[in-house]
Each structure stands twice: as C-alpha cells, then as structure tokens.
Length: 223
Image (cartoon, rainbow, N blue to C red; front, side, top):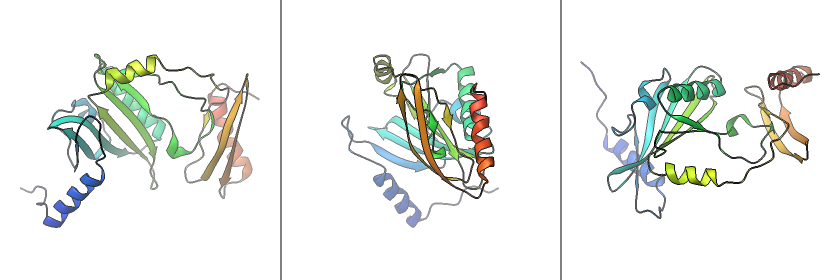
C-alpha cells in the first residue's frame, strides 16, 4: 500500500513562504493562505467531486480558523469556453444560479487569456463561485474556480445597484490558439462600433479572416 511521500523540511518552508506571499492586508482582519493538493472540508462537494476535469490543488484562505475563500485549479481537454460552460451547467443543475454581471462594452478582439469570468451564487446568495478558463500552452484548458462563502449578499447588492452600459454590436472575438495577439482597443456608441488588433502568426491572412468570420457567423452575422 502506497501513499503520498512525507513533506520534507524544505518543502514545508517553501509552502509557508508561498502562503506568506499570497497573503495581503485585509480590513476585515488577519487571514492566512495555504497551498494544498486537497481542498477544505467545508467546501461544497459538488465543486470538486462532480467534474471529470483533473483537480490539481487549491489555495485556501482562512480568518480566525474559518474558511473565507478557496481557489481551485482544474485542467482537461477541450475549449476553455466549453469547459467553463459545462462546469457552470453542472452547478446550475445542482441548484446554483448563474448571474449576469454588469460589464462595460467588451466586444471585439479579445486576448484568449483575458476572457471574462462566470459568476454563480447559491440559493441563499450567501456564497459565490467565479469561473475563469484559459488555454493551456500544451493544449486543452485550465479552469480556475474561486469560491467565496462570505461576500455573496454584499456583492449581489452591488450588482443590482450597478450601472448599465450600452450593449456593443460586436461579439467577443478570440484568436486561434498559439497566435500572438495584441488587442488595441474597442470603442464606439450610438450603434457604431469598431475593434482593432495586431496578430503575429504564420497563418495565411485568409485563414485568419475565416477563423474570425466563423465567430461572427455564430453570433448571427451574415455577409
């Protein structure tokens, strides 16, 4: 019978140093941050046990011994948007509610690693989950799940009183994986919008154009 190897003194010191570096001054009181290959017992089990993604580990934050937050990292095959959507759908099926967050106009060309997050809250709006997925360099997707059991009601009140923005005409446009891409801004108003970006790639211009054209078609655009 085998199990995890015991932690060495150097590994313990490195883990404690990482925890110190990940801790910041908190107006609500001193908090600790701990890196672990597991997850806290107080965590809702569906956040880990109901997904086929590989669980890598978590950052656990506590204040006076009470859990105040946890961020977990998963990885697996698939497109980041699909991975995040599937995880969100699984949580909705278990009673969580997906919340649309007010955002400033954000259509047009986007960097793949800077896509927005998905917010879900539990039935009492006491706990929140933020999902953010990105491409992995070696293929597949990395999913970060941030769990906050403390600030759900305050955050929801802020959202409900937040400002609304004009919806842009442009959908979000992501570059192909592996393409060096630099968005240079999206702007407009009054029904007119534009978006600029630079791409460094060996793809032929027509191939790159076709890649973005498919995203526009999927959003209802037509020639």
